[in-house]
Image (cartoon, rainbow, N blue to C red; front, side, top):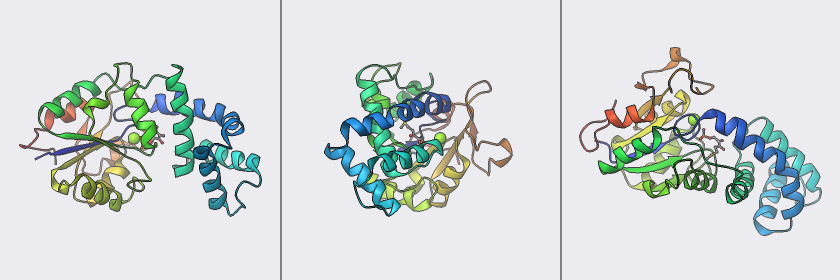
Length: 245
Ligand SMILES: CSCCC(=O)C(=O)COP(=O)(O)O
Ligand SMILES: [Mg+2]
C-alpha cells in the first residue's frame, strides 16, 4: 500500500545534466556578485554569518573570505545548508528573469498524474533547498507542476539524505507509516538509508542515453527494485494495493 511517494530530484525527476551543467554553473558564476549586491540584506547576511560560524571566523569580518569558502563548497558539491540556501536565492532570480527553466524528464508529469489519481500524496526530498525545489517545479518546460506536490523536504527540514533518521523524520512529519511510503531515487546509498527506516524503495536508473547518477553502478543495486524511468515506478505502484518491494 503506497499512501505517500517521496521523490529525489537530481537523476530521478530531473536530469543530472541539468543540475550539474546548468544550475550549479549558473549559481557559481553569480555567487560573488550576488554577495556583493545583497550582503546587507537579511537573508543573504544570515547565510554569510552561518558560513563564518561554520568556519570559526568572526561573523562579517571578511565577506570575500566567505565567498571563497562558498565557492570551494560549490566546486566540491557540498550539500551544506548555507550553500544550498544561497544557490536557491540565485536560482530564484534566474527563474524569475526567465534565464532558467526547470528540467523534468518527460515521464515525470505522467508519473505524478498516475500517483495523484490513485490517491497517493507526492513529496520531494532533495539536497537542494525547499525554495530551489519549489522554483524548479513551478518553472518546468511542462509548466507549473507544484499543484501535484504536497510537500518538500531538504537537509534543513529532514537532515542528510544518507541518514535513516532523515526518512524517519519525514515519515513523522507527513504522518504516514514507513511501510506505506515509497521513495524513488537514482542513488543506491539514499535508498539504503530509506530502507533502513522501513520505507519501500525504487531505484530509478534512467534509460541508456539519458543521465545516470554518479553512484548508479548496476552491480550495486543492493536489492532495490530497478526501474528505467519514474513512470515505470508509478505503473508498478498501485496505491492502496501494492508497492514494489
Ligand atoms: C532542487 S534542484 C537543486 C538540486 C541540488 O541542489 C542538489 O544538490 C541535488 O540534490 P538531490 O538530492 O536532488 O540529488
Ligand atoms: Mg539523485
